[in-house]
Image (tube, rainbow over all chains, first blue to last red; front, side, top):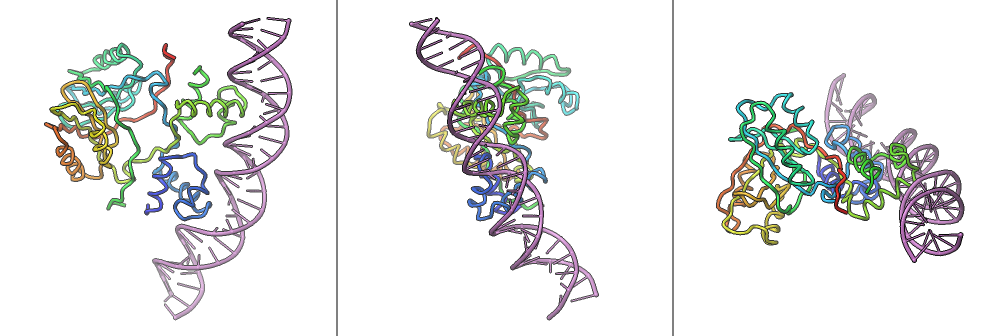
Length: 152
Length: 152
DNA sequence: CCAGTTGGCCGAATGACGTTCATAGCATTG
DNA sequence: CAATGCTATGAACGTCATTCGGCCAACTGG
């Protein structure tokens, strides 16, 4: 994981559809070498997958909210994860430190749909409160630059 | 935007590197037709871009936190957005309803780096408080299924 | 210091795939 | 019914992904 690998990651995050020839030129490598590096990044799991970014409004998910869930017990169990995964509007679920124990990112079409999801969340065992933070406008969501770190 | 388009979006979210032939077979179309549909989805902006998903730990961003910022003024200005965009560790920035006015998603290598970012945030004009919610474990982050909606 | 080994790069060859196009079917509209 | 627009098909063509032999540089053990 050197500077060239980091450059490749940045370039691919910006546009994963460009050719290996272009990619190689950008970092000063041949087509084959660029291909080989990207292959290894995939192999190592640094690149998890190639995907598309979708316009949320266009696919009926114009509503975005974050929900802080407080519970009377530890929420880190597999059962909790599975229950949350089963809710198709929950985009992210994190265990957090602080007064809340769970933080969810939820995308729905309407506020009514958000209400439905919240009802489901309250149905989970041990849930005490669910504080919703509704997003009015998103400034940006973006990929981040890789950084060099001591470990590995 | 019919069921086939939604299927294509789902398939591409799962793996944007598969061939148009494969894609066509999955939805019951010829290679050319699948290609044409995806081209139009890009043209309309439904597909914003194709990108890669990176392992955060592997690129030195193992630390994740959400920050709720309270301010004494409206934070929706371009100046605020630009100031946040200039912070390379801020992955997302949203204007929200509720007692906070801004919600940020921040990824850094260490807690020290998080502190640096928080210092920068406090330096923004009119910022009163910044409550950090530190992520201990991420259950999942995933693409969501497109849904049909009345509008358009 | 010298093989021997490893790992990465280059450049070329080959086969697969992206992309385009002519044609045809189908629905909608006047 | 005729005209128009939209979309699918299947084939043709050019580009690109993928592989491979050969080369070079760095490291390793004798």
